[in-house]
Length: 166
Image 1 (cartoon, one colour):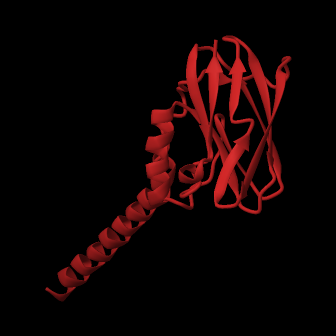
Image 2 (cartoon, rainbow, N blue to C red):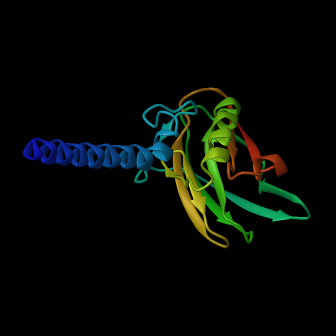
């Protein structure tokens, strides 16, 4: 009987360890799964860095209780490729996430639950204070889209802009 008790105890240890490993793996992947489907983009598609593109410089700033982008409105033609040169002129991290208003609002709610989430995606970048980054995008669909900083509290302080694709 003692022999069977040891085997049962050993099996119990293995099962608990397996459950702990599986739970840890699930927890590790939760923030990444909080992102929307990265294979599909509402505002078009990632551009081709080696092809010609119009350069649009975008500055990110904060001060006086406000945050924002300059310019806050950008017009492009359908089919046009844009090389966004992003400059963070502020003292805080900022993001540039390109999507629809509804998608950005949904993702902002996810960011509140996972504030440690950082973006270096095809449609978004996180930029350190006084840093720069580039994002190349081809606008394949007409409509109005939004670029926004989804770090909790930033969107609410006015850190969003509009892209109009004609």
